[in-house]
Every structure is written in structure tokens, then in C-alpha cells.
Length: 222
Image 1 (tube, helix red, strand yellow):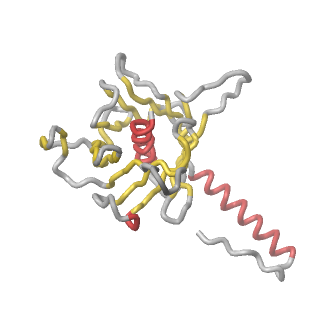
Image 2 (image 1 turned 90 degrees about the vertical axis):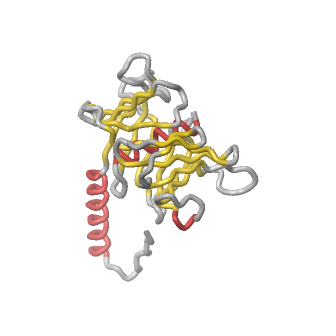
């Protein structure tokens, strides 16, 4: 979004009115944001996964994985219904990409010892590998559909450091649509570390899809 400078000829009254409108827009944007607490722990014993709760303490999403680095990850709602399913595909050694599908994926077929669904994915998430050039701050690119080579098909870019739980998801216009942040404790001398953190979802991206990106970042950089 382009931000145009204010004209010097604006009167003080108009300037104050614009500031009020800006504050209202900011408040509206904050109201549209969703704050989720992400716990890097499964509710099922002997499983690795995630538990996600909202600001009221309600369970929103869950992930239960029975192996450490699976080629398939499923994001479920509180009742255990599959929302998004992600499949890993490795290409040319260092390249790692994931295809994201809606719901529970059936009709699985075997190809090169990797299970791949027969229906089309909604997007492809590719890990950014910075060898000699490029933006080292970029973690991953989200491509529309199966397009995973043309930068013009990039829908979102993830930047920051997942290890430090400081990431931003930016859309095509470089607007921040989601953020991963350290969770701050209300009590002094209490730290949640990196196992419990916040996912702030703004307008412009679905909360479930934002959580799916968290899962993929965890697979790529943990």
C-alpha cells in the first residue's frame, strides 16, 4: 500500500481529523486481528504435535504426529476434523517444498516411495535456500497452486527467524498479514521460552492457513 505524504497546506483541524481517522482505522485493524497461543506439544501422549488455543482459552487447532519428521502433516480443529493436509517433497537435495491441500486427503497413490494425493493443492510452500545471493531474511515463499518456480506467482513471503520465534508473513503488497512472536508472561522472572509462543493473524489471511505455515516452518527449521 502506498502512503502519500500530507500536504503542508492542510489546516490544523483537518490534520487532527485525519489523525482521528487513522486511530480509528488502527483500532479497527486491531479488532480484526486474532491472537492465538501456540503450544509445541500434542494433547495425545507419546505424540509430537501442537496445541493452539484462543484468547479465551478455547482449543482451536491441534496437530498429532507419531513420528519426528513426517512427510505428511495434518492440521485439525478442536474436534479432530482435518482442515488442511500438507505433503513434503524434496527436490535437488537442499530444496524442500510442501503442497497444501484442503481437508483430509484421500485416494493416496504411491510414487517414488512418497505418498501424493490425486487432487490439486491450494498452494506450494518452498523453503528459501540462501547459498550465494538473495534475501537472507526470507524463510519461505508461498506459491499459488502448483506454481513453484515463477516469483510472479508468490502469494506470501515469510521473513524473520523461526528459531527465535520472530517471523512475519507478508502479502504481495508487503503488508504484514500474520506474525509469530515470543509470548510475554505477566509475571516477572517467568519465561515461556520457544515452546509456547503467539500467532497474531491480521486481515488478509485465514487463521488456519497461518497456522499451517507455522507447522511448515517448524518442519523446515527445527
